[in-house]
Length: 410
Image (cartoon, rainbow, N blue to C red):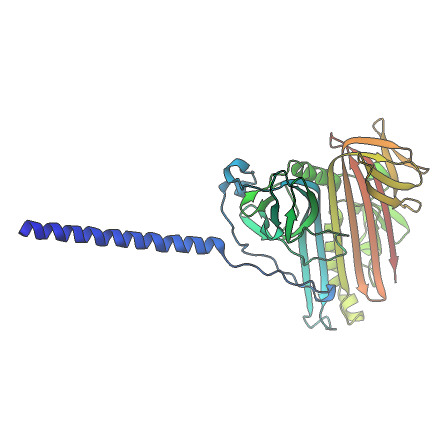
């Protein structure tokens, strides 16, 4: 009888132990799932430039964890396959930078009233094709952008002057069999775009073969020394002469009420130059003593890359580029170009001052760069703008460059 009691006691203890183990596993699973899912983020409404605030996502919501994301490598898509996704292709990729020193009321220099907003953006222009026999539903809210251990949601809160004529992907798009739709998706990120960016649909990586080529072309266009192409230094000072950055004098950089320095052409260093220039002049004690109100400073920079194109540059006095299907990609006036149009011919850049001849480029990449800068007080301001177009061949050589720049003071 003793043995029977001991046996029942042993079974009872074992059953209690199993129940405790199951409870612990259930609690741990619940905690893990709740941590992975997180709360949905609400996209803020677009405010005016004067009221814009800077919100950096310090702890982006983690959708899932892949060790390979931390070193920028792309996981094998077969490992994270999601059925019935449309075929996704990259039409173009844009990277943007927006900086504004704005105010909400007319505070003086001594009273903190300014908010420095500095934002980086990545924009994907995509086509979505349904290769299945059934209708697909594509929800753009499931698109995310991963870089390292950070994951960002899409945003509609960006300066409309930074990216022109964006056509957002529908929130809930219905794609019929054989149908192709297109649209753009914008992400606010923490730094300039690079190869580590990975587009996700839910937790599925969307591998875009032309993305890395687009980043390479962006790097080529941003780091190139355009004085070789256009035959002039990077900056013009007060309309009296063209100088390189290292030749700028202190009196050029610090002048009342603002320095009048204009970029003749654009590369990546221009952003850092004007960030430093505007910041230093905001700290100028003489200007502070003479002008009671703080000036507004704005920098807008955008670069768009259109990879893998067979294109034709049409003859005439306008800059018109068409794709192999006859679609018009670019149509701009070049009658008043200031910096010029130059074409690589036999390893030598030739500046064109006459009508363009028809030219064909295969497997080329088109890069468009825009830069706008404003510093001043309403009707007393320095404003500059530049638009630059570059064509890069399959060897990553710049074969054509055009820049139109303008500036004025008030």
